[in-house]
Length: 72
Image: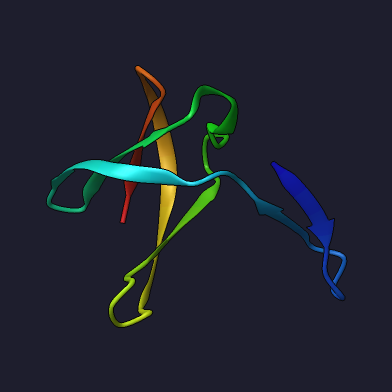
């Protein structure tokens, strides 16, 4: 995980990559490598590789097996 500060002195965190394992409505489960798990309430950014559209989700719960439950 890499942290830096932008011009507004707001902390910006760049975590490791994960992959989506399940979607039920606005609930999205994302699996990460163990060392790359985001903290609860961190933003997760998903980028559509075809259109480059971005979706921001919020990590809400660590559900085990290196998986985070997020709300889109």
